[in-house]
Image (cartoon, rainbow, N blue to C red; front, side):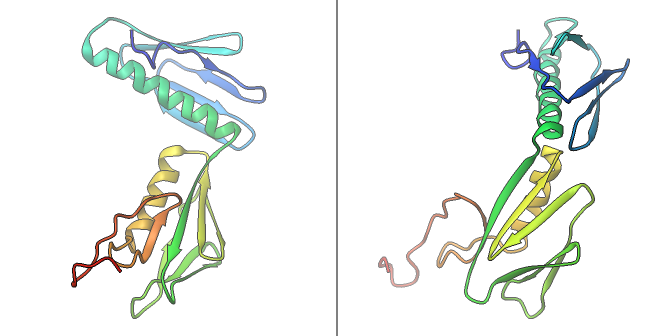
Length: 179
């Protein structure tokens, strides 16, 4: 039995789950999400818990079992509390500001970089910290990764965009001495 797949999903109050023959729809205070049910996997609702079961014990079914449970659990957490990622912008002259719904950044290039924020994601800027939040965990992570990819932190001075708490391995530079 999959260690992840066999765990029941607790349904918080205010969250409604609809199980069709091929889709699971989760609706809550923050919005609604929908995911397909993979073949060989069944979803059962018992009172305030959701159980994910598989048809047989093949390796492919075991993988789908854990995946489906993780996806549905992330949807339940997303519509009830939401997800967020924080990014830090380090560097002299590096600035970040919101221009309407777009994110405008000065990252040391000859031109400002404008990132169009996709629908369903909210981005807020406080000084040089960017907070990406939304109800879809995959989309929040993808947007944060795309923003970070615009100017990855470099190993000599640590300038660039990094995740909050990310440790940048520093290099000593030309002289070979630690500065």
